[in-house]
Picture 1: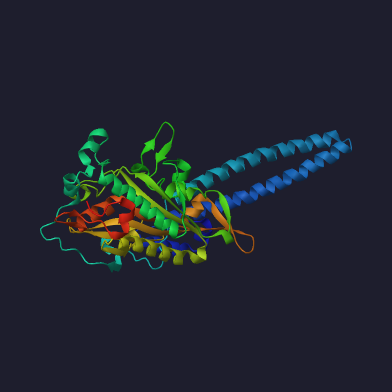
Picture 2 (picture 1 turned 90 degrees about the vertical axis):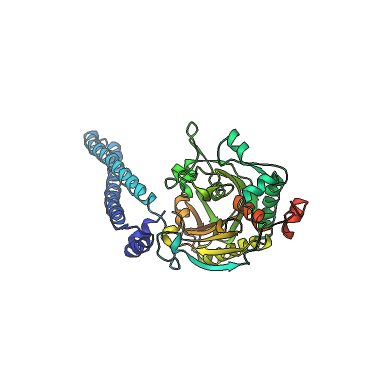
Length: 422
């Protein structure tokens, strides 16, 4: 969430930055600043009222000591009026604060200077690519055909038991899932990330803290009776570990990772591009998260990008990296790099990871701070990345490494599977 201090000091700059997303935020920001000005005026009046009430309370005590009961009673009447006024002022302040909070909650993060203006994926910038597109010749089957032929994934059984988008993995398909998860977690461990196994449900406060609420409320599975949400990504419970905390600067960065199933309604997703593993309602992912000092978050983002690069190259998958334009970035991000792998049989790119720097946006919602060298509390920067999401990785592995005899397993993955071919 944008900070009031930032809006007060950089109004025009914030409006210009949000315009890169295609958003005209001038009216909303001016409304916030006007409400905040009223709130500060009421705060001063309240402070003055409370101060006057304290002075009169002391007078009452003095009059009572001196036996001047009539004078004391007169002052009591005056303090009673001040107490009533203070209650009214507090109510007005609360109403103004709520309105400011509601408007702020619906404003997205401001993009970094490097992020270009744009409206959709067509405006994203290609910043890196690696690997050659395999020539499969006659051995060119989409992953859903390979999965059925080799008895790896049963989409029909998943649809029967639950619904479309909830597949069963079986045999070597299940082992491939488990091996990839172990591979990704081991690599995260080598990179200094502490592993967590977090809850798969979160409360509304956690959803708000990382920005899923109110932005993506309709895309999350909601358990209405308990007011809990199935997590759309491990980012939510992992980052919320640090909600309402103050860290020591010397303890930064804090690096954590976790494997979780993820649950997304994906409402409105139809067509050939969602076939097979391309888009699921339940899928597995390993997430990496960092809580970092603001001075070092840009460098940290590059480190996290390099971490994901290493995973894809070890899996021998051709990939490219896009820096998302402002209009294609998520609500909470200041900068995002998307990784896409080449799907040889489908002949298109599949997104497998997003690595983002949220700067102070999530931290302000989370109230996650650190003590600076002067002993003052400052907001941290938060970052996260998929390292990696499994469904499209599995799709690309099956498609890109297929041959006449089946599917060849990349060398780096063999120790985690116990076999080198499907």
